[in-house]
Length: 126
Image (tube, rainbow, N blue to C red; front, side):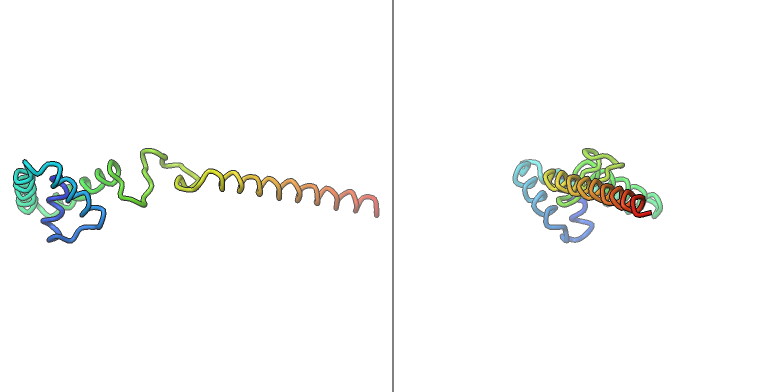
């Protein structure tokens, strides 16, 4: 909540659509202490302005990376769930992956048979 409130203050109300939804949902859920959340966000924003530019940039990048990893935006792949060395798209349907594998094996097998047929034909002609 504090992160979104601080981001809202920093960007002067310009948030992504999903961020606006989360911001409004949090405002409704913790309305009884929303003033405290806004106060904390303002204090963190002021403290950030007092830091050196390099420190401010580093902390901003760390905070953004933390939220990208732990609360991924909709449409992005979750790096914790699927790992770094994934080969396929995790959002793809498993059925299409099986079909693609079947088509690949089918063409590989028949191209191998075709090459074998060509070799035996060349031997018998020669």
